[in-house]
Length: 372
Image (tube, rainbow, N blue to C red; front, side, top):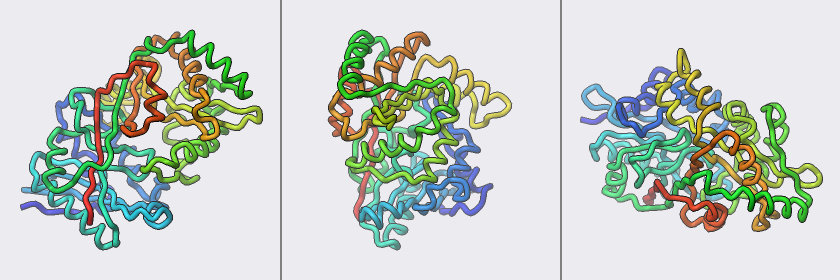
């Protein structure tokens, strides 16, 4: 018999967070989170995302053992302001037993109906900065710290339970050597002169901070037309600054500003922490932090986390300035592989952005939907 237990305290939340450690034990492609960070992420007193969202956490138990987990999420900005009556679910992990998946997803349906919502979509997080999608191709490639990894049977469970494809995401990578440094240097000079723009490079995190709020203004405007978009609040931006910006190499964050020093484009790239997180095994101490700091300094792979151009400057070649900046930063460091985060398969603008680099699609993931 499968029973469902709602998480109500910190001890149970740690059980929720650590369940995948047993599910993916000895899997060389799964990348574990830092347990404390994940627990804090789900704490309404620490994560401001809960100002506009509700979440309920559940574990499925059979014979005294955890066999599955799920988060039921309602983003109230999305439901009330955008009038998108969506019930979200995320952090979905199960053993290979469809009955477990059924019990977990029936709970999501129940909560959605209680709140008069119209459909379910998942797996997704709280907003656009969270992980999204169940992996459907590319199980033999290592995950990243900003994506979920899962077993192949997740897709089969969801489809057998009546869920259908909602959105498809592609994950691509390319060799840094594919980037034509001479071309981007030339085009960058032309674009900067034509539109009176300037590139900003950094060596200190404190010099980045004054621009982060403006960066998110550009982020909101650049991504607003996407069907997945939910705005990011000021408190969430502050949380993001504290959690991520201070840990990312300052030289991996790039801005383009206009003649008034206003941000018109940005990009955030991170060293690949995947192997370091696997070595850390969920904890920073005693050795986890050492592995992460080593990766921060020496990783030859990088992950393009966010990139955005203000709508007024889109289709004007401004991205060439950003790529020129990265070419000059990465070449001396011996960067080899550039990995991109999941991008919607129908996002033609983003495809055009990367087409010169001969990208290879190595993973596909999707969200699933069912009407209530």
